[in-house]
Structures are given as structure tokens and as C-alpha cells.
Image 1: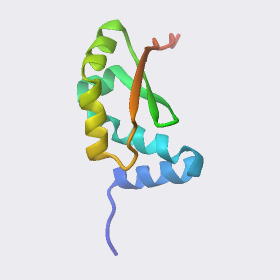
Image 2: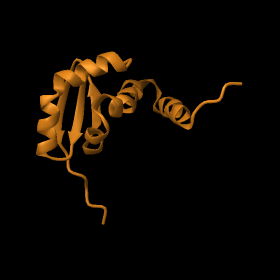
Image 3: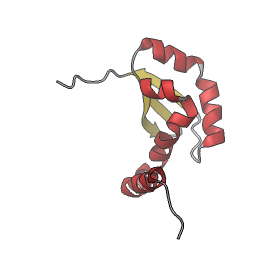
Image 4: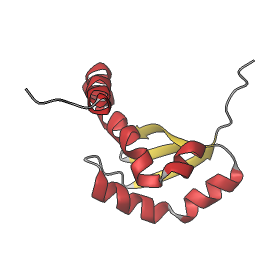
Length: 100
């Protein structure tokens, strides 16, 4: 019996719970940190995937600009890393809601 890491079990569980309808988005979400790197993954996250376009929510205008400048590189990385291959990435600012 082969042992699976907790991370692999979590990914499998997320894909099963999301079902076929959300499988593409879940895969893109799970690959996001590897594609953009640790720092940018802390400042942004995938929000929606529709018609081969990935929508990414960004913390503020500075990080949005950084991602826009890297857009073609990020698309190329997704092409290399992920099973799902977005044709475009659109960024928008979405500030976190207060947790009070």
C-alpha cells in the first residue's frame, strides 16, 4: 500500500467535493502558488475561471500592477505546470473584508 502525503489527500478531496463543475477552477487554484510564487500568492488568489479566462483577485493596486507586468509569463507557467491552460488572466482589486 502506497502512502500519500496530506497535501495530496487534500487535493484529491477538494477535487471530489468540487465535482466536475468546479474541477478546472480547483486545479488552477491548487497550482496558483507554484505558478506565481509565494509572495504574490499571499497578495492575490484565483477568484473565478470561465471561458478559458482566469480572474484573479488582488490585494491592492501595487500588486495588481506587478501581476499585470508578469501576465504573459504567468500564462506560460500555467501552460507548463497545470492540466488546465487558461488563455488569458484578468486581474482586479478586491480588498479583504474586515474580520471584526
